[in-house]
Length: 253
Image (spheres, rainbow, N blue to C red):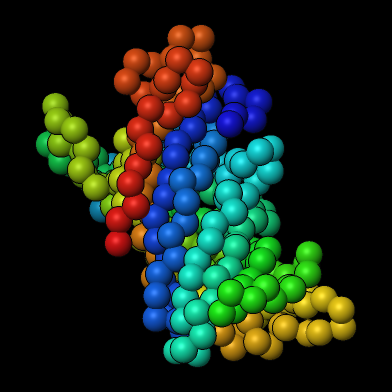
């Protein structure tokens, strides 16, 4: 699972659902591995008197040595009547950033974490009414999936944005989302048009674009507790003996 881990490397499993608004259904995104290189935490004293703990980390999906999710299969009713099954992959097309901002207010610490990553949706195989539709080897979205970006000047370009909110009470476990303990991450995404779909001279770009592409697709992902993979002795309860994350999360709608 891990790719050249360091003393600050964390790994975690993540899984969840993504709605496909046009098809009035939800696609299960399978358990995927994410490796994160933690950045140096910084204390930020704001003019309003508040104190924030900031940390920017970098991450990547990992599946069999590639920066992508495992292949996953979804079934929908295309155009409301045709049962369609598609095998899909999310491919990472640029850096993944993980920005955490913890407001330090005794006894409650309020955390917000933004995860940004450009992901291209690739279609591997399609069946309509049980009949295979040959989409060829290069069927994918023209550009990465696009979420509303709260800071477009700092983060230009199309990418997925997921937000996790959490609370850390002194002396107790965290609630909601915190990077190290995991939790729910939510976002909304527009699926771009498709290109390169078809084989034997048949162009299926417009068919897939009409079926799937469009805005307003809600995403909810659940991240499990992280595992420190670059240390000499795995942390008990966080990592298995072969240094896999101990917690495998269950998807939630």
